[in-house]
Image (cartoon, rainbow, N blue to C red):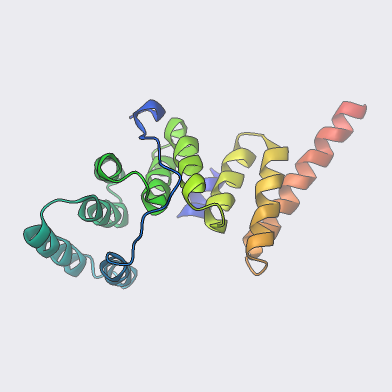
Length: 185
């Protein structure tokens, strides 16, 4: 599936996000540290830092989210989904948590989760080109080419240097043109 290559429970179980994203200034430092450790394949160190945070503050939406990120890195997608859903029950205004939920769901082919999660993330972070890109991929892979075209146009407007956006925009437009030719014949 194209989307899984690009990406490297039920939708009704998703909490409804509020319209305001959370103020992540306090947690940004820990998130960044965990991201850097995971990017460097230092998973054990990331786990130790999250465990230390849990010991100090207890289980929070943030620690659950970070555990979900670690599980995603370890390709334990079902467990990651469970953690991120628990995180979202505690804090519903985190667009990154909704994105992580969607990315996990893609790898498990749980399309019933993907679209609601991406739309929830988009409500909280409408200028995040990555969300628009993955919505475009979803629409493209489900043959909703005009919706895909719109999302990829948004991607190229928000981040003109993101070449994958242009590539997929071209593919969506090609499919729309093919559909037009078929309709005309």
